[in-house]
Amino acid sequence: MFLTITEFIGRFHVLLVHLPIGFLLIGLLLQWISSTEKYNVSKEVITVIIFCGMIAAIFSCITGYLLSLSGDYDEGLVGWHMWMGISVASISFLLYVRIKFGQIDIWYKVLSVALLVAITITGHLGGSLTHGSDYLTAPLSDSTDSVVIPRKIIPNIEEANVYGDVIQPMLQTRCYSCHGAKKQKNNLRLDDPQWILKGGKHGAILNSNPEESKLLKRILLPREDDDHMPPKQKPQLNEKEIALIHWWIDEGADFNKKVKDLKQLELIKPYLLELQSDHAEEKKAIPIIPTEPVEKADEKNLQPLIDKGAIIIPVSKNSNYLMANFVSAINITDEDIKLLRSIRKQLAWLKLNDTGISDSALSVIGQCTNLTLLQLNNTKITDKGLGLIKSLNKLQSLSLVGTKVTAKGVIQLQSIKGLQSIYLYQTGVNKNDWPALKKAFPKTEIDSGGYVVPLLATDTTIVKAPKAAK
Image (cartoon, rainbow, N blue to C red; front, side, top):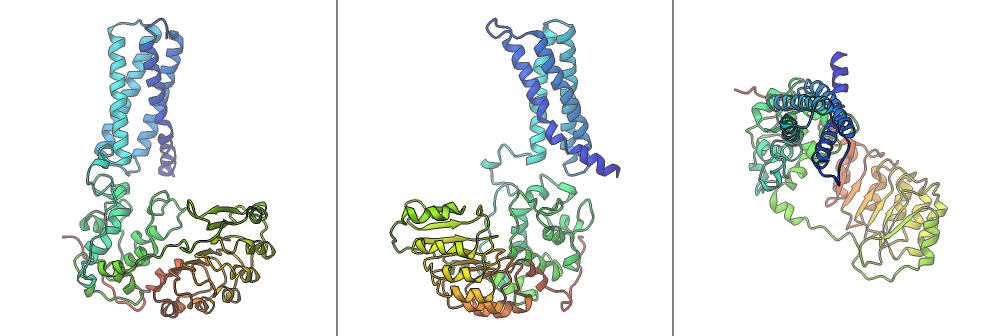
């Protein structure tokens, strides 16, 4: 309980630490310009400002110390930052006493200069703690902790090193900023095999069972969870990357083996193949905006949709094609969707997420034959409704997250040859349907969301524990 309370209080350091900087710098500025008659400021005002800065500095020191107990930061750098923070509080106290009870003399000027220097150094050390010691020069350098690393070119995926060519680039771009050479939250480093095997503050992060490996468990936590990794405000690992990490741990988390040395389940093979450079070059995205010219929609046809709360905007500058987004609309019904008929030629993107529409609305949507993107997440549509949009031959992206559709209904759309992606998370599609869907849509990326990782079950796979570092 003590540790929890101290960490909670310590987190206020992030809020408080900027107050002394602001108060004290303003106080110093007012001191220096008040020597001129034009900008003269009373001694009492300056005294109050320096006093506020001193109190804020003291509380920043206290909360900063409590925050340092978490062990999330480099101890050496924390030590320097802490003592410089204490120096800011001490000098501001001496300056306050000098202003209130003393006079303007050489010591007054020395303390002012010393305070400015101390604030600058303390601020720089604080920036180094939170953003890395090279936060000022990172944009000008090639540091792997602070820039996105381009994925290695892999001419033959079977000959690639699983860790070095597949796993490490993911860790490098998603994890090194917090768990690299310059910063180790929870004393965890992921930039070298020996550190990965060592684990961090909470123990080992690898286990022969992927579901028990903290490395994977933190990734799979809900994004809103405080322990989710990477933090929710940072770029996340995608479904394929998570599946590859699961596969690597499942096969023993070896740092030296090649791809060909590990067992490859059917689900993993296409993910690995996508990393192969010649295969990646074959995948050329089709423009998601129709190329055929279309006349501009009549303004009078847009107003009824806008009145219903729909957002109607062009999909790009100088284009007559439109996007209709019902994100802010309330109580949208199947009857309201009939209003789309008046702009069916111009409609390219349609977003009906979280609306109350059902299958009958899809009979109207099926008439919007220029649609390339359609989002129906969390609606009441079923397999019956999917049969009504088979005519959307230009459709490239279809999102059905949170609906009751099954694989049987989705397969009805295999005649749409240009379909590039289908999103099926939290639908009636289950893991046993995966092979049939991949066969029906060999060139389509099918995002299955929550059930991709469970497909890599360990009950039929013999695994070995990671070898200890020598």
